[in-house]
Length: 479
Image 1 (cartoon, rainbow, N blue to C red):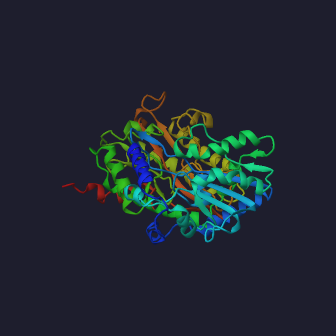
Image 2 (cartoon, rainbow, N blue to C red; image 1 turned 90 degrees about the vertical axis):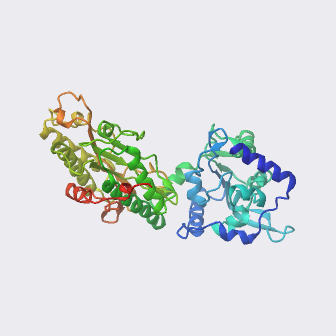
């Protein structure tokens, strides 16, 4: 596919004038009505320019396209920091911020110049190419629909780069580290920047802006929280349908299909990460995602599955009995994990260190395992044999997003304690073998505490068992 796309592009360049499609096509570029507005992204760029000051220039680039195999590419995903500043999802794009301003040719009258502080370099439009591969924004679409003050085609980056730096009299150049795996068209576009950095490194101070942008990303804006809540709402609905659908004899992949069907049915573009549907002995494997085993009567099913919506990923895990009823041993382990999660969530509020919440969960897990005789000493170190990951992580543009040690209002975390008791665990009653339990919720830190965004996915034992008496979309026969 990739090679074919390249051949089509070459053909179009040879035969057609690539001035771009008409402005009337712009209305077809955005079907979604709940995208974050261009004004919000502009405010983020303005905030960053205030931080770097008038004697600096910042350049950001998106991700390259990635080849899956032969002529097929992976679905494209932009660089998260670039997307945070632009809301622009197309490949081969570069953003330049010039706080002091730089002169460019007017788009309305090429004989005149205008002063701008931001420039997006985007792929040009081409009607023939777009017939095969979908519409592009082009500079006009980027300005009209994504709110950029000025945009031009990415082939202009090479000729404009030096003039932008010199007209700004830049003493500092902020550029994310040019990764060694940059490839394809993007690598070619950035080559002039690399050469300039090598040539002028002694005259201009080179700095990496990544830490500045990621600090901005820690506290979620109201618009981001709304999208994370939507992603989580969709994910919770999928967990409910999976609980209703599961039956002994199903393949793990059948439950995976339920999750992914609900995600797409409710408008999510894709999974936030590969879906984990782990039954029986697989439930004790943290990141198991083969999803090919047949689910057996008496198994627990640990399902870690969530949707991505408008670029923002949720992350929910639920554990439930394949036959609709927890066994005594399963119930005991599950309740310990649930109590640990509740203790951790209760500790979450602004000003509290994340480690304090984690400590609360550890204490409950340790006490619970000691009472069951699974550990012989009431020590966290003994408990960690069965709980070998952290309490959780921030979520946002990445499922494992940026964060900080001390919580503040507007941060969004997962809280996901777990216990994993593998077959043959020394000194453990075999009744507890192959019981893996993780309970994960998406928690928004509020001004006076926290809010569970994923509460719509049942986690109390009685609620789970009651829901599982119903049938779900996964029980429908395929004709």
